[in-house]
Amino acid sequence: MLAMWLREMASNDVLWIGIVIMFLAQFLKPFTYWLRGQAFDWHHISATGGMPSSHAALTSAVATGVGLEQGFGSAYFAIAVALTMIVTYDAAGVRRQAGEQARAINVIIAEVLSGHPLERIRFREVLGHSRREVTVGILFGIALMVLWKLVVQPLFIR
Image (tube, rainbow, N blue to C red; front, side):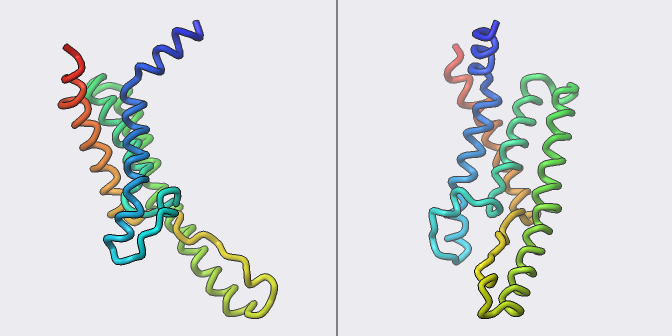
């Protein structure tokens, strides 16, 4: 029974292509920072925030794949879209605000505790995404999943 579940999971192209799309989006981040005039830094490849949102790319790709396989009127697609909406709202809303608060706290620490041992504390400021970063992540995920399902995958299935 376990072997059957593992085979089914291994053959779930929507899952695996979604994960590949997430990693591709994450891989693009150092380049998009560089294109926006910042120094090229490979550390952005593992950072949260930035362009495009890899979480939005993953969830929108999976939702698109589910829609293409199960139908856009299916309950499965509805669940995938609902999950995508929650993830993207969180990325552009809650996590973005947490980053703004971290920026404000860092300024307060720099001003109030100058010369004090606690001044070394730094909170991560790039936690969330702008709406544009989330939108690009969504479009990236949808486009690549459509490309996979309608162009690439049919080349292998004959």
